[in-house]
Length: 182
Image (cartoon, rainbow, N blue to C red; front, side):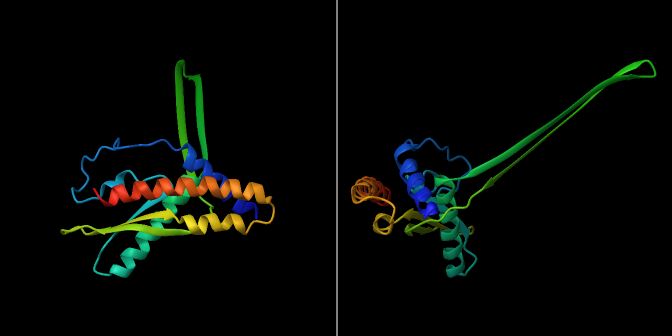
């Protein structure tokens, strides 16, 4: 139940707090048949890309899994980092010396349960370097239904959370329709 609460809180926070990125991503070096939404996905969505090597099912499954992974990283990512900095100075045989060593390590960990995701748009690029693109988004009905299954919230809290999430998903649907019609 705590995981579900964390998911709902993180999901609503992410949807309400993410700014509109617009077309700020530069597309230099990106194949021209790359869908625009693959570079700047709408809120509450993740993009997965997989090389199509003749097996459409494998490319689809891989791209969708990568899209869910990207979506989970948007909602909650634990980042761990460490910098080690070593310095030493001294003298040997009448000459000064110094040595320095700096190392940096960082890792990102995602442990997120996603309730109700589905592929909203899929695209297979043409040409020699075929790619399968999948836009994976939280599904409004499944996501809102998770609120009804919670035991620890009052009816009033459930209704408020559900109403906010439905409003955000309506906005998401409008953005997705706009993307598909471009």
